[in-house]
Image 1 (tube, rainbow, N blue to C red):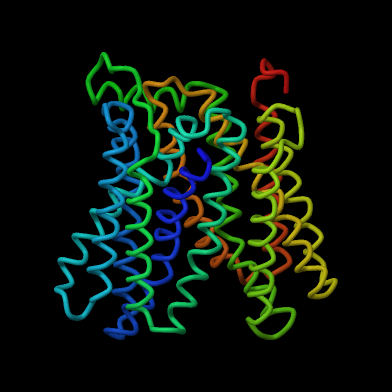
Image 2 (image 1 turned 30 degrees about the vertical axis):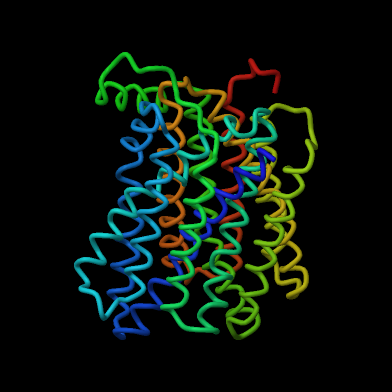
Length: 383
């Protein structure tokens, strides 16, 4: 039941976060016919998470009752999303302020929560496989639920649904096991510095963080690449939906597979590197125009390998982080990956004129490069 209790708290919260990214821009257009405002509101909800990640992680590492912070973050998110649903009737500055607060709370359940997963699921390998499954389900189902809500009741209904999910996550968090770290012996600033220093100077963790961040440049570019493939090869954007759905379903199948059983006895560093290389290598099949079926299958198979890479990355963060800065390592890592995905999307858009095949080849090369970075991981763990 420990896995069930963790997923009951983590999945709804992460669903809400993933869905909000889709719902907010649509809400701004639907209510105020303002595309720019939609982007600004989404930015208000996202950017604080990147900036606040080190401090939020430090607080999680220091507080005696980290579960209270998680519950508070979940309730803050629920309130912000619920009020934002009434854009056009509630003063926009109030909505911006609440979304900024929700953004500050995001690292608690996107990164920080992961650092406590072994409190709920004691076996680390299984724990981080379950956490990878949580992220994967949220990334797929969050936007899908928003799409359904948009059809049924519009953008306001979608945002209210995300608020309800955050509230469900808050309730689920009330009974979640989150064991406090050892009592800190230094101040907050020293802890922040210690965490960042460890992240940069501890070679195993620096390699894992670099590879995980670089891989998200490719992940963020994948959506643009799918659209480019669809338009240039088949004359419309319709095929992009099939390509992205295949990639997402592949990721879900991979996450389910690693959550159910352990498939290799190789080290997590080897698993992470091999999975990234496999992701990129399979995507190379989609570089030549071999037809829509081959392209969709290539993206689906590539997606399968993303899940074991994520599970291994999370496990390595845990293994290579001292308890005093563990949450900080997780929150900074999550923030860097989010920022890298945004950079990837921008770069892919700028490079779209080169042609879809070159874009896919570049994305594949980035994933392969991410995997090869793991060759720099020290071999002391038998990998």
